[in-house]
Image (tube, rainbow, N blue to C red; front, side, top):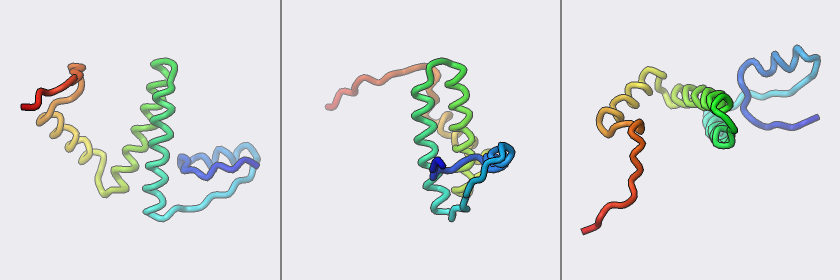
Amino acid sequence: MPTYNKLVRDRIPEIISNTGKSYRTTILSQEEYVQALQAKASEELAEYLASPNDEEGVEELADLLEIIHSLAEAHGATVQQLEEVRQRKAEKRGGFKERIFLVDVEDE
């Protein structure tokens, strides 16, 4: 029996059950949940970075977005509040659309 010890999407137990397999799960505390989400974010980011093409890259970005939504909620924010913070930061400091790569800054 493979051991996973990782956070999975909510319907995974149902999907496993539909295959006739047995499984064990546990419900995490809030602190364990945030830690597991952070680990999952790292895992999904690595999968995104290893994506061989745009289609798989977008799939992995969708997974990352799902984790970001869950992390926002775990930190007491709605997705709308998260988007408002993102927009404020973009208005104040800009986004990344212009592809500016800072090489150095002269230190006087």
